[in-house]
Image 1 (cartoon, rainbow, N blue to C red):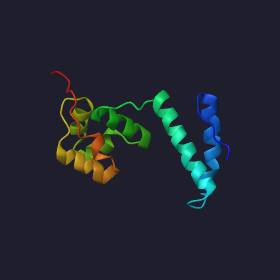
Image 2 (image 1 turned 90 degrees about the vertical axis):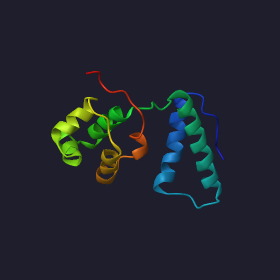
Image 3 (image 1 turned 30 degrees about the vertical axis):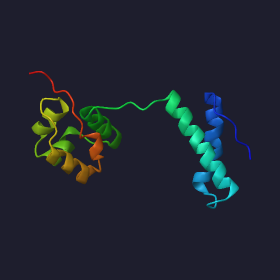
Image 4 (image 1 turned 90 degrees about the horizontal axis):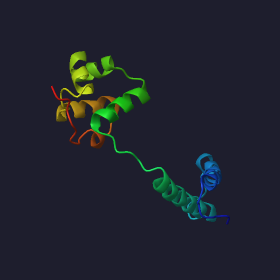
Length: 125
């Protein structure tokens, strides 16, 4: 079983290449190949967590990023929140997201509520 530590980006690329085939053709549970996949996955995760830590976004920044990634617009957000002006107020930090708004976003777009239910700063008027 060829497994080695991941100490560099080159090692990471090697490990990613090794596990890629397992996604298309998963090994049988309990097999040596499944164990190898688990170990390599853990090594990849540990290396990425050390070298590429996740950035915690504020709710409005998360919403902007989510909208960009999914091709949604302020108009689309306004349809969920009740008006385009309400969407503008949220996106420009003039109004805070409410529990009802977060619920609607979770239901309509599948936005993870835990990414929106956090305190954040509003723009000073």
